[in-house]
Image (tube, rainbow, N blue to C red; front, side):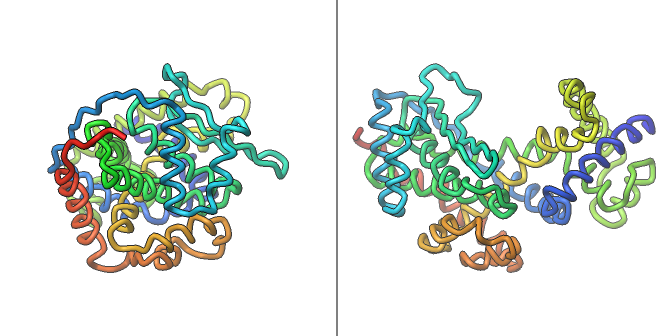
Length: 347
């Protein structure tokens, strides 16, 4: 087992060096994020989230103009940018899953920014929801600031939830909307995060992993069995080894890239979707729409504000002892309310 620990210590050291420079929030808050993730994952497991989504005959123009209607209801100042997407060639619809996923790509080169939105069509109203999600990324993607990095998924997920609510209230056939897609997605992210949270937490808190690490975890953080911890370390080491192998040419050319490659392929994404969903569920129930719009419009101007300060500016006190309880109540309400919408009329 010591051989696994030694190899994993090398990987985790490179990852932490990268996180210290590029993603300090995760490094400093890994323990609290792990607690939130575990409780959120456990709560999601109590839901039945399966809903088969039917296809329909929506054209790409139907998708575009319905998304435009929703954008107009959010903030009419966004319409000029939205209307320009097709004319500028910045929006592309794939009809045969040409893209790996629907994305908004922001390419920053020499003080110029080129943005592209690619949408993999599902041929139902999910296409509208995904377009809203990616367009919100587009609106705040002109700069690549650290707080934009932390909050952009929250903002897109919030307006994605807004779009689902808008469509259901409009009377759209709920069988053509996968209104649980975000919760199912965050469940996947939680599962992945669960695979590495304890070894990463142990390394950050106690240094190099060894045979004594389990005792330190048991004494100061959580009750975990030795066999369970060793299995998690072995599994994480295998995953990181595979990532290293798949990128061996890049790493050979520049060994200093290994921390970035390991982090960006496996570490830095999941927690942003987990926290983004938690905050979005909370904000949709308790925060004011105008405050979220203001945050989206100014997120790249908040370099001197902490994550805590930004959350307070939209009515979220993450240090409130009842914060997570309120979040779970909001999540229960969101899931329960979907049963209130019967099969509607196509629009």
